[in-house]
Length: 246
Image (cartoon, rainbow, N blue to C red; front, side):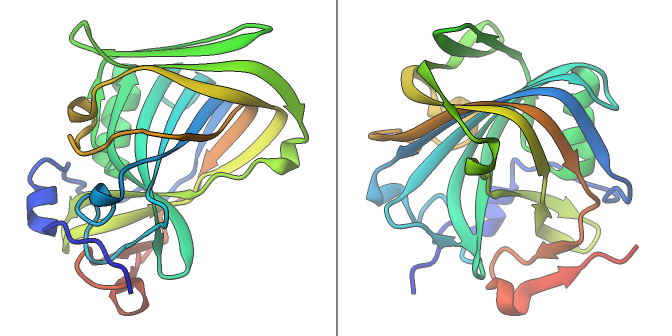
C-alpha cells in the first residue's frame, strides 16, 4: 500500500488556523474554471503527502484557476496547486498552495476553509483561440498557464476531484474535506502549456510538472457546501475520519 511520507507536523507549520468550520453553503456564480493536469516525478509522490493519503500512480499535479464574477465575498480569482491522491477510496486534490486576488475571499478561504492561500494577482483571460492564466505574488511570477486550441466538450464530460486542505482546528491538525459542486454551462478541451512555474511559491519546492496529460476550460457555477468530515492526517480515512457536528 502506497502512503504519503511527509511529517504532518512539518506540513502544519505553515498551515492556517480555522476557529470554526462554516455551517452554510457558499455559492460562486459567473465562474470561469481552467484546469491543467500534469504528471510529476515519482520521487515527489510520497514526500508531498501526509501518511493519511494515498498517492496516485503516476504522480500527478493539477493546476486550477477560478475567476468568479460573483460570490459572498465579491468578485475574486483563485489559483491552486493540487497533488492528486486518494483519501480512502475517493479521489482528492491535496492543496499545497494557493494565490487569491480579492482580500475578502482570501480571508474566507484561509480562515474558514483552511486553504493555504496568499494574496496576489490572478488574471484569467479567455479568447476564441486560447485561455491564459497569469499568477503573481509581490510582483514575482508564480506561474503562467496557457490553454490552446479550445475544442468543445459536453459539460457532462468534465469532472473535478474534491478538495483537501490541511488546517489547525480546535481538535488539532486535520485534513478538511471540501466538496465543491460544479454545474457547468459550457466546456472545452484545451492543450495546456506551462510558460513558467515557481513551486516554492505554491508551498512545495518538489512540485515539478512534467508531461501534460489534459486541460480544460469551462464556465458555470460552484457551490461549496458545509464541511461534513475531517480526517486525522497521520491516519487512514477508514479509521481517521471524523464527522463535523452541526
